[in-house]
Length: 407
Ligand SMILES: *Cc1c(COP(=O)(O)O)cnc(C)c1O
Image (cartoon, rainbow, N blue to C red; front, side, top):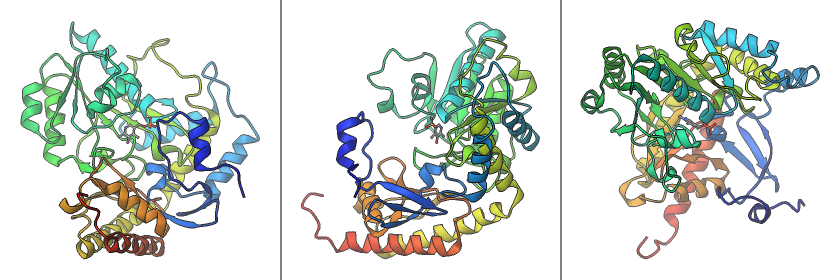
């Protein structure tokens, strides 16, 4: 028996997280096992990160091959895996140029800095950034400021200025707030952390037009929606518009930390030599793994699987929600799926997650009132079915418990 337990966490770690009681030690595909050998179906994917499951043989091969060659040289030199990955990403997207970093927050930090630098050069005072309530863009000071959850920035003042928050999917509000002082509008194609809320087509297209009108940049935060998660390589590809800047991370490395900011050749000139940087960004190990992830997602039947498993998952969730009254109609895109808890279960999304863990299935919350699912993109039909069966058992167990007074 390991002497490392959840109690150890309290003794040696900063308390900014509250991890589950069990500790996973090994994974394979869409399953993983804890210290006691209990098996879990992974419908969370490490928060939309493990896009090809745990210990994927192709990713293990890419990582170990690169590990025997070259790990890191810093950006004083470039490296072959980074160049290969940048070629793949620019060939497959609107973008001509890539900046690599290590996380979603860093990718957004780069995007926001680019937008500010660009706007301030265009005209004096052109530095307003517009974002939306319930948006999530990361946990650095700039990204929590642009994000739409006030409790993530409260207490950290003074914050970077001239950031405006509007209601998501409210085109009239955006039209009213925008002016020639706006340098960028930033949005997630599907708000992930905020509750799995897709942007409407009208909103996205309207935002694109307004950005043209006011010479502002449209930034798509595809940290969570990108890399096949929503059924396209990037979600913008299914929305009939093209952003000026796109950020991604999470699924990009399939579990190896890497982030990227992508943009056009013109805009890339803004980040001239010396304006921005990252020691680890574009690290050879990370880029080798991300290159293998990219090949797998673009070269196989995975996109079709995302659609089919997404439909299967949503139908199954809707059936469970009806049976127990725990949550309402599901929403989302591809394998980024949300199920809002019903009135009777308000504030108890986390209870459902914990009941799921007790039955051997892992799902997430998105905000306090929405269950979120982001399984590996290559999860099988049988694995989704098994996960749903266990979630059904979790809801049955919860409903069988006597109601706590005033709960
Ligand atoms: C997770 C997430 C981020 C932050 O990514 P980190 O890697 O945690 O810094 C930013 N934007 C979106 C949309 C995300 O889902």
